[in-house]
Length: 143
Length: 143
Length: 143
Image (cartoon, rainbow over the protein chains, first blue to last red):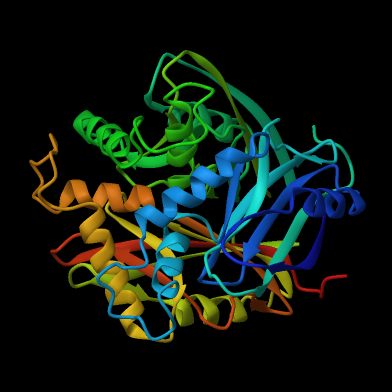
């Protein structure tokens, strides 16, 4: 049994969904773990993680629009000092994920055919987002 | 330390919450892990996972009705090609979970008295849903 | 590779966010794991977990107010026998987290600078909430 850890930096240019499935995938394959568990952790409170459909891009546009509507910039917030997009960013993060764990079988993530892993940026200005990857598993196949 | 993996298929007959706690429970007990971590992963973007009260069935009816209201079929979506229930299904998945990890102590999941594990089906037509179980742990007791 | 498990009890005095980052942090440090994965699991369906900003307290006030608005007490619920705060409690739990996993690197949780771990109590009366901590990892440093 062994572990590997890795930091991924994602530069965002405004609100929206940024796919990084292939970055994760390639790193996992390089670790030569046959059976294991990958954990993806986002070190922020105004950006989050989401597994969503990676086929039709209109799904991502609808997701973004939906969360903008669900946690609007003009809500009755007390915390407004960091800009109108800050408090909605915290709420969108609370409503989605900060962490995802994905099993690895036969050396590959068990993501479904249409599942992509996304960083969901909730701030309007460019940011550098840090994602930590943690993998634990075995170089031998599972039983 | 050892690992086990398993695939569970759940046939759904329309939207709603399908409990599969006992399926998970029985599989975990058969692996003879005393201390460990079980991960449940749903390989879909229009069905999700939820841990909820398994006592009063009206809780599940209210949960379903609430999410139907929160992500309605007649929303202003661009992505409508796959039917009126498809985009709401993606949104409901984003608002709930794709993955759950539950510690195992003394050979059993540490679920609370009223906690059940559910597949939350968001599509109206019947589907076959694939859930991956991953268990890592030790056959000896914890310290 | 080793594992440790621990139960944490949190006494709540009404709805709101209760931080317990330092409790987790100190326990993790005592386990002397250099590289690993911590899982935090909440054994309830009317209280949940959240990673949020631990700097400005107005963020927590806005989060609480937002979820009260999103899942109001006067909703059209069938399940009302356990009080007006019970069904909203289940919905708020469904919308947030029951479980969080956080990687450990160099003996410390990889939480970001502003990330705190909170129990989100959704009931108005005082409760004793049980949180299970599970840590798996290695006493040696990661590669």
